[in-house]
Length: 214
Image (cartoon, rainbow, N blue to C red; front, side):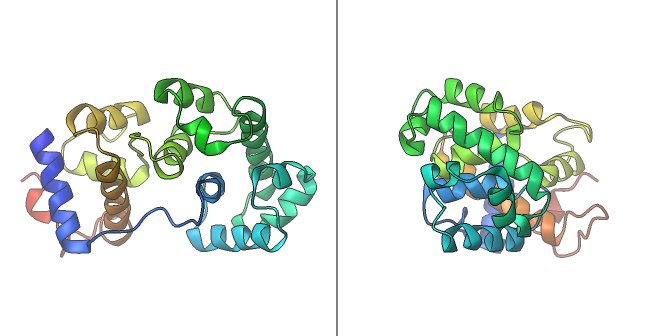
């Protein structure tokens, strides 16, 4: 399994090059983006983040001082803005009360404890939590998504109904514990899913086509 996963990584990196994920000027911006990107495009997230920056609210305490309605208005371009405002507020309150208001120090703590705590924050699922840990905290937490399931199942590495933790364990149990590797491989899988591994696959020209089961 390790050899197969590393071959996938090498083929994708050769074909697409480094992806330079996650776009964001600060760890806090990355964490906010991880919440906002649920069920929307990154272009819409960028517009919402620009609104927060323009209002001088892209920091924990200034954002926490907003009412839910004010926060929802600023993040409206990201879609589902009322729901996402509540999720962001839940994260902000957690970081304020448990993390002492310092995201970077908080994320530097015991990884298993931090992941468990963040998963307990209402509205944060495992993909969002692992994105915060990996991309904002620079911690070794592999991120999985629908693209990951599609790619793994089509290559016979997991079942089409595999759960998140099953997919995550497949990477974390077989790959070296390497933040840079986790970062790049997830980004490359997303790139592959966007261009090739769609609901109706476009295998022609995919770097992984030679690895498909007969």
